Figure 1 (tube, helix red, strand yellow):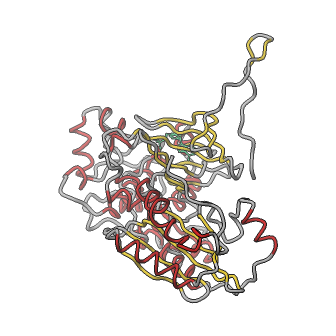
Figure 2 (cartoon, rainbow, N blue to C red; figure 1 turned 30 degrees about the horizontal axis):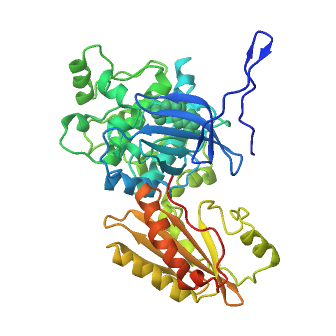
Length: 451
Ligand code: AMP
């Protein structure tokens, strides 16, 4: 549901003052108010002027990030993140960049932090179980897509307006501390309360096992209302973590006690795995077969990769271009929704054969030293352009419309460099020589430079 998101004019005594002009990012996201902030990131409630939907915009100063933008692995993780869809993983909708800041446009979690709830007192076991199940479903899904959180903690657990858990910052843990906005907790307060013992070792660790440990600490906190490992002396706290030294409060049921023990196992080799958590009696209690299957969905075909494969297989029936399509294209109306949920795709119609357009896309990608892969078949074909480390640079899709016409769509991988490649290099070439002479069915929406 679109919402207004705006605030009322300010009043001073009986006089009304005009509202200060709202800040609009990239002509698209109107910043409404501050939602929260970490050490160096600010999170705003914003309104997407295109759709009217409320979103959260996290503004991160680039700070010490290399001049040429984000490091390769960060770009890669962000590219993966953007393809993750899970009801309990906060969606990263877009990544935008200005000269001094990186902006993550995120799904809005109106319920705020889960731990605001815990701060009011420990949760009943059933409610802890509900949140823990949602957490494990999210973590399992991301792991099966090769994304690890590595920094799960209460601040990253948000709630939507229906009280469902949304894990935030999944995949963003590769970002250097300085630009993540959560450096404060680690560096200033130095609280390793959620950190697995093997991280303290600094000998390298398995991202999946580290996440499972943090889930154990979170479960403990939900049930107890306080941390399992806590000591005013940091070294003493480290020792407790190494030894797995904690005590469950007396109200903890034996089944929960057992599960916490398997999660907070200091030896990562012996720590319980997600697959086994799913079959744990405390975890499964009162869960019907269908609900269980839905939670464990990440084991089925619902991974991002499988979704990707499904997309390319979904050859659409030929569809003649109708008057509505033509009017929409030529008047520059927003076409999002007509061809699917992606709203940021650039598109134009062409009378050129799909093969010629795709060949040009391949050519340009190869000339730039990028990895180029063909996808799909006759009705729906495309080219995926990736960097050397598998980061998505651009995706080009050509759909047959009938009457010899095709619609060409392209989207960049999210970063400034990717956008530059698409708008400055690929897009002009895709439109091809025909559009320069104005003789094809090519339609407007020419690329414009990155803001
Ligand atoms: P962070 O810098 O990610 O720790 O975010 C700082 C604070 O902003 C969080 O503790 C939340 O209270 C709030 N916040 C972050 N992301 C969102 C979101 N997507 N929706 C609502 N509030 C958020």
